[in-house]
Structure formats: C-alpha cells, structure tokens
Amino acid sequence: MNFAACVKPLTGALVGVLAIATPTLALPSGESEIENYVGVGVRTGLNDDTAAVLDSKLEVIPFEQGSLSVRPAILIGEDFEGRLPVSFDLALDEQFLVFGGGGFAYNFDDSDFDPMITGGVDMAVSERLILNVEGNLIFKSNDTDAEVAASINWLF
Image (cartoon, rainbow, N blue to C red; front, side, top):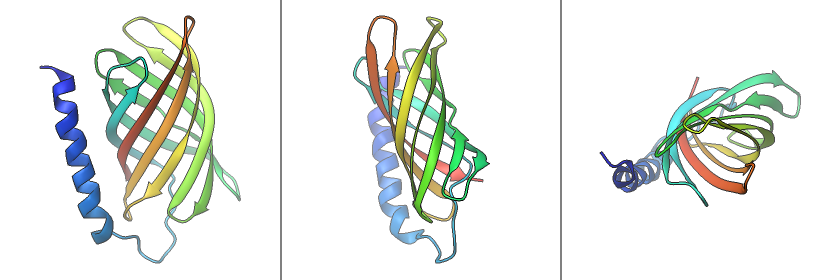
C-alpha cells in the first residue's frame, strides 16, 4: 500500500475533526494545563516524503513560569525515523503554550544520528485534545533538513 496516497484523506479527516470539535468541545473556564500527551499526526519536509507521526510530550521538570519536557516522536513513511528533543515550554495562558529546544533525530533505516533544534506551539482545543504544530531543523552530515509536523493529541 502506498502511504502517500493515504496522507491527503487522513489530513482532510484531521482538519474536519478539528473544525467540528473545536467549537463543541471548548475548554471549561477552569484551569487546564498541557502536561503529558500522546497522539497522531502528519509530517512534511523539504527533503523528505510525507510521513505519519506518533507524537508525545512528557513534562519532566515543572517551573513556576514553564517546564522542561521531552517530546519523543516516531515517523512512519518511506523511512522509519525517531525524534527525541528536550524543550523548554512557556505557557502563555491555560490553553496555549510555546516551546523550543534541541535534541536528536534518528533514521532507523540508514542508522543516521543527527542533532536537531525544535520549536512550536501546543493549543488545547478541548479539555483533553491538544493540537501540536512544530518545526524541526535537522543538521545532517551532508546537508540541513527542515520539517513541519502537526498532530492531535490526547492529554493524560
């Protein structure tokens, strides 16, 4: 089965779910913290084919004005890849935070292990659903690669 042929319908379905769920699953007025989540999404990049993403965020150290987190991800497409960045997260309000950090990208098929920087946003679209959009800059031995990933995640 050609994975690329499935990406457009899956992306359309994700956008449709978000469009329907956002107004009907609005956050309650109480405090909602974006701490730990897992989810699925899609990645596209300059030198890469589109891939499915299994995404996650685990808060390691909370601070008064933010937190330190790990954000492991697995990418499944033409290549099988992993991402392991550490980020500093800064909450702008109860339902929106920005993050930035660095870590490593690993390509399981080619055994490439490359440094990377990451940055993005997490936005609560309901009490349990988190939209994550992030960009990664990967420093490979022969070039630099840029990618953007978006995922919808379940807060736990």
